[in-house]
Amino acid sequence: MKKNSKTPKLPAAKATTTAVATVKPINVHPLTDDQAANAIRQQYQVVIRAEAATFRERVRFGGMLLQWERFLGEARGGKGGTSGDGLKGWLERNCPELGYTAALGYKTMAERAIKMLGGGAVVTAALLGEGRVEDPSGEVIDVPAEIIEKRDAFFEKADSRRKLEQMWFEFANGEGRPKAKRKAVAVAEGEGLSMSDSATVMWADAMRAFEENRAAFHSAARDLKPAVARKFLSELKMLVEALEKRVSSH
Image 1: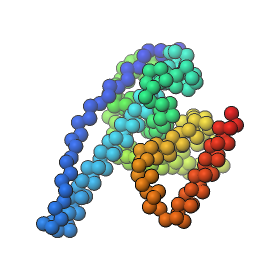
Image 2: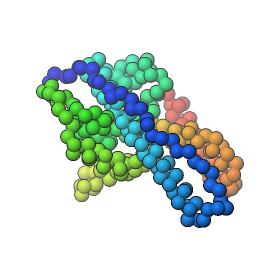
Image 3: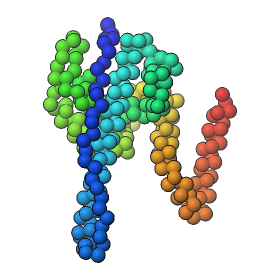
Image 4: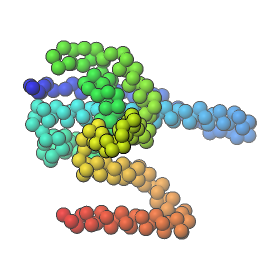
């Protein structure tokens, strides 16, 4: 089967036109409880919509990485993630600000979304916001409206990383399959990451949450009750020991 080495046309970055709401301080005295609650509820909905839109763009970004990685493997003889070849080496040379560990996280979200939507080039194009796609025969076809509707319905539910992961868990382990077959099914339907890459994604997610809230974690640590602090410290010491053991083994 002849591989298509045609350079993919990556979707252009979409300009964000979402208006930024200006939050006015609530003047407590003139407002009733209901009025204040209504103002807070409205602003919270603005926050929720903005976060959902941001998450959708993260998944779309993962789809772009998948598309480019596929091209690197097919047209340039890349090996997927090996240094100097494939996406990892390409990122090191061309986008050093985007580490491969972070790229793995974005790719994983996109891979899972594509598989839950049915898979294939048409679904991938819909995820990337493209209206047309080239089929194996070279014919350019429009992305069906029902696929776009299915994509939009998907993101109505999967509006955060946590919800996408829950949907993926149900997708990979559900559908009435016998328990004995679930492990094999999960592997067959999984994103194809090695154990090392899967571990890297898990740790990267945890570290990203810490890095984004580093100051808050340091501040909160000072306010913990001593007994709670001792418990967390014990867990962290065990994690440090596990990391040190892994580092010293190589």
